[in-house]
Picture 1: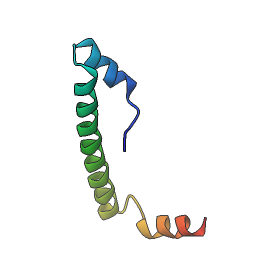
Picture 2: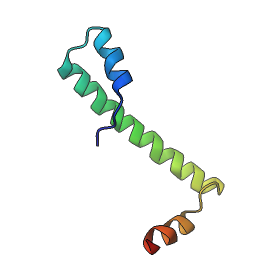
Picture 3: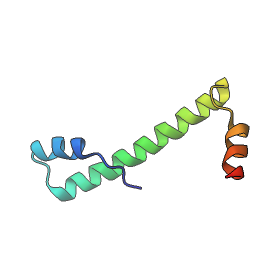
Length: 62
């Protein structure tokens, strides 16, 4: 999964990173972002901020 982040790609390019290095950095950033997002979701579920049962019910009703 590749997230669109042209500002980060431009920032890396301006600092002299070649396209191959930028691609590897962006892939690693995607993995980090996915991990943080997943952890935040589970934190939100545990605090009651997100009602997972309601979310599932809504998704399956579509």
